[in-house]
Image (cartoon, rainbow, N blue to C red):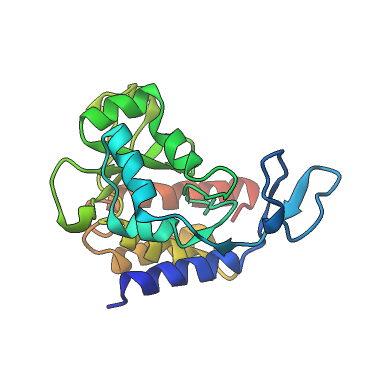
Length: 229
């Protein structure tokens, strides 16, 4: 079984092998620009080594009364990176000019406030704009390696809006998304997702089966209609 650091390293290796582009803003860190911005405002970016300490994340945990998995903190502080949109989901990026801002934004809103009272901690977004990815912290686990669900914004903070567990932990999310990034040039997304069931048998392959089967069907439908990957 791969170590947590090996899974983190593999994720970033696969992410940084993609085309790295985002939109220029006044807060864009110049040291991360790998190109000039084009006429549409886009530029190529490059990662740089992270400099945040675990204590920086502890301050956010204390302020918002949340708990982060150790693997999530170790992952996020490894690099500064300007985008982590991985098609199926969007993880919080990390910029040296706005340290931890996207993590804060995921927590600093009315729905997040209601969820946090239930020990449900938002940390990212699902890829279909349904709502946030959340750590389910209602039951204590070692190193806060909580299972992951999706929350539907339409439920306005009510617990009923929680999906089933779609990943058994953040490390399994990293493993599955790394697999997507690695194979996305050679296979369609809906062809790769079934591999999650073997990669994460206690989450995606158990409680998350129906969720991912629906994603697979939606991908097939879109491909039939639009030829999308």
